[in-house]
Image 1 (tube, rainbow, N blue to C red):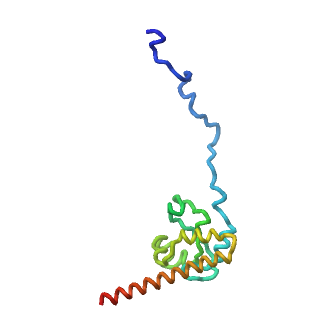
Image 2 (image 1 turned 90 degrees about the horizontal axis):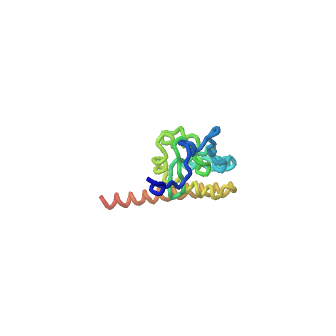
Image 3 (image 1 turned 30 degrees about the vertical axis):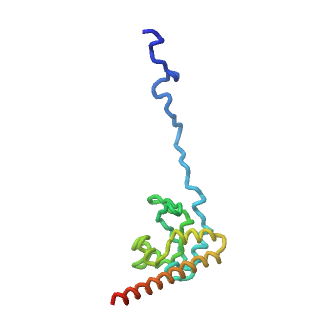
Length: 164
Protein backbone atom coordinates (compact mmCIF):
# COMPACT_ATOMS: atom_id res chain seq x y z
CA UNK A 1 0.00 0.00 0.00
CA UNK A 2 1.43 3.31 -0.99
CA UNK A 3 0.91 6.72 0.61
CA UNK A 4 -1.56 7.62 -2.11
CA UNK A 5 -3.85 4.72 -1.23
CA UNK A 6 -4.08 5.64 2.45
CA UNK A 7 -6.88 7.94 3.65
CA UNK A 8 -5.67 11.49 3.98
CA UNK A 9 -6.26 13.52 7.20
CA UNK A 10 -7.29 17.12 7.03
CA UNK A 11 -6.33 18.18 10.54
CA UNK A 12 -3.00 17.87 12.25
CA UNK A 13 -2.60 14.87 14.46
CA UNK A 14 -2.88 15.63 18.17
CA UNK A 15 -2.59 13.57 21.29
CA UNK A 16 -5.92 12.25 22.66
CA UNK A 17 -7.51 14.79 25.02
CA UNK A 18 -5.23 17.64 24.04
CA UNK A 19 -7.99 19.45 22.13
CA UNK A 20 -10.42 19.46 25.02
CA UNK A 21 -11.18 22.74 26.75
CA UNK A 22 -8.95 23.38 29.68
CA UNK A 23 -10.43 24.81 32.84
CA UNK A 24 -8.01 26.81 34.94
CA UNK A 25 -10.12 27.77 37.95
CA UNK A 26 -13.77 28.17 38.80
CA UNK A 27 -16.38 28.56 36.11
CA UNK A 28 -17.88 32.04 36.13
CA UNK A 29 -21.61 31.95 35.55
CA UNK A 30 -23.47 35.16 34.78
CA UNK A 31 -25.20 36.64 37.80
CA UNK A 32 -28.82 37.68 37.88
CA UNK A 33 -29.15 40.98 36.03
CA UNK A 34 -29.63 44.00 38.24
CA UNK A 35 -32.43 45.17 35.97
CA UNK A 36 -34.73 42.56 37.56
CA UNK A 37 -34.51 44.24 40.99
CA UNK A 38 -35.93 47.72 41.45
CA UNK A 39 -36.47 48.74 45.10
CA UNK A 40 -37.83 52.18 44.18
CA UNK A 41 -40.51 50.58 42.02
CA UNK A 42 -41.47 48.17 44.83
CA UNK A 43 -41.85 51.12 47.23
CA UNK A 44 -44.29 52.72 44.78
CA UNK A 45 -46.21 49.44 44.46
CA UNK A 46 -46.51 49.22 48.26
CA UNK A 47 -48.07 52.71 48.31
CA UNK A 48 -50.90 51.67 45.96
CA UNK A 49 -54.24 50.25 47.18
CA UNK A 50 -54.79 46.50 47.48
CA UNK A 51 -56.17 44.96 44.28
CA UNK A 52 -58.59 42.71 46.15
CA UNK A 53 -60.00 44.71 49.07
CA UNK A 54 -58.92 48.27 48.19
CA UNK A 55 -57.06 48.95 51.47
CA UNK A 56 -54.92 52.04 50.94
CA UNK A 57 -51.90 51.81 51.12
CA UNK A 58 -51.56 48.06 50.86
CA UNK A 59 -48.06 47.72 52.32
CA UNK A 60 -46.94 44.61 50.36
CA UNK A 61 -45.83 43.82 46.84
CA UNK A 62 -46.70 40.29 45.71
CA UNK A 63 -44.56 38.85 42.91
CA UNK A 64 -46.58 36.96 40.31
CA UNK A 65 -45.00 33.60 39.44
CA UNK A 66 -47.40 32.65 36.65
CA UNK A 67 -45.66 32.27 33.26
CA UNK A 68 -47.01 33.55 29.96
CA UNK A 69 -45.54 33.55 26.48
CA UNK A 70 -47.97 36.27 25.43
CA UNK A 71 -46.48 38.64 28.03
CA UNK A 72 -42.91 37.38 27.54
CA UNK A 73 -42.75 36.23 31.15
CA UNK A 74 -40.79 33.09 31.81
CA UNK A 75 -40.23 31.73 35.28
CA UNK A 76 -38.17 29.13 36.99
CA UNK A 77 -38.62 27.04 40.06
CA UNK A 78 -37.50 28.69 43.29
CA UNK A 79 -36.62 31.87 41.42
CA UNK A 80 -38.16 35.16 42.48
CA UNK A 81 -39.71 36.87 39.45
CA UNK A 82 -38.48 40.28 38.37
CA UNK A 83 -39.89 43.23 40.30
CA UNK A 84 -41.83 44.37 37.24
CA UNK A 85 -44.18 41.42 37.93
CA UNK A 86 -45.30 42.66 41.37
CA UNK A 87 -48.82 43.70 42.37
CA UNK A 88 -50.07 45.53 45.46
CA UNK A 89 -51.85 43.44 48.12
CA UNK A 90 -52.27 43.87 51.85
CA UNK A 91 -50.99 41.20 54.26
CA UNK A 92 -54.38 39.50 54.66
CA UNK A 93 -55.16 39.21 50.94
CA UNK A 94 -51.58 38.17 50.18
CA UNK A 95 -50.90 35.59 52.90
CA UNK A 96 -53.30 35.36 55.86
CA UNK A 97 -56.92 35.05 54.64
CA UNK A 98 -58.36 31.61 53.82
CA UNK A 99 -58.76 32.78 50.21
CA UNK A 100 -55.37 34.54 49.95
CA UNK A 101 -52.88 34.03 47.12
CA UNK A 102 -50.65 31.81 49.24
CA UNK A 103 -53.53 29.64 50.47
CA UNK A 104 -55.50 28.91 47.27
CA UNK A 105 -52.84 29.50 44.60
CA UNK A 106 -52.39 32.23 42.01
CA UNK A 107 -54.68 30.91 39.28
CA UNK A 108 -57.64 30.30 41.59
CA UNK A 109 -57.09 33.61 43.38
CA UNK A 110 -57.05 35.71 40.21
CA UNK A 111 -60.07 33.87 38.82
CA UNK A 112 -61.85 34.59 42.10
CA UNK A 113 -61.20 38.33 41.99
CA UNK A 114 -61.59 38.50 38.20
CA UNK A 115 -58.44 40.23 36.94
CA UNK A 116 -55.63 39.38 34.56
CA UNK A 117 -52.56 39.79 36.79
CA UNK A 118 -49.95 39.99 34.04
CA UNK A 119 -51.90 42.64 32.14
CA UNK A 120 -52.19 44.75 35.31
CA UNK A 121 -48.46 44.23 35.98
CA UNK A 122 -47.58 45.50 32.51
CA UNK A 123 -49.82 48.54 32.85
CA UNK A 124 -48.45 49.27 36.31
CA UNK A 125 -44.81 48.94 35.23
CA UNK A 126 -45.40 51.23 32.25
CA UNK A 127 -46.23 54.01 34.77
CA UNK A 128 -43.35 53.15 37.14
CA UNK A 129 -42.04 56.69 37.58
CA UNK A 130 -45.41 58.26 38.46
CA UNK A 131 -47.14 57.17 41.69
CA UNK A 132 -50.39 58.97 40.81
CA UNK A 133 -50.58 57.17 37.45
CA UNK A 134 -49.78 53.84 39.14
CA UNK A 135 -52.62 54.36 41.60
CA UNK A 136 -54.92 55.20 38.67
CA UNK A 137 -54.00 51.87 37.03
CA UNK A 138 -54.97 50.02 40.22
CA UNK A 139 -58.24 51.92 40.63
CA UNK A 140 -59.07 51.19 36.98
CA UNK A 141 -58.36 47.47 37.46
CA UNK A 142 -60.60 47.41 40.57
CA UNK A 143 -63.38 49.26 38.70
CA UNK A 144 -63.12 46.92 35.68
CA UNK A 145 -63.24 43.93 37.99
CA UNK A 146 -66.39 45.19 39.70
CA UNK A 147 -68.11 46.07 36.42
CA UNK A 148 -67.35 42.60 35.01
CA UNK A 149 -68.65 40.89 38.15
CA UNK A 150 -71.86 42.99 38.04
CA UNK A 151 -72.27 42.12 34.37
CA UNK A 152 -71.85 38.42 35.19
CA UNK A 153 -74.44 38.68 37.98
CA UNK A 154 -76.92 40.35 35.59
CA UNK A 155 -76.26 37.59 33.04
CA UNK A 156 -76.79 34.86 35.65
CA UNK A 157 -80.05 36.47 36.80
CA UNK A 158 -81.29 36.66 33.18
CA UNK A 159 -80.46 33.00 32.62
CA UNK A 160 -82.24 32.02 35.87
CA UNK A 161 -85.36 33.95 34.84
CA UNK A 162 -85.32 32.32 31.39
CA UNK A 163 -85.13 28.83 32.92
CA UNK A 164 -88.05 29.38 35.31
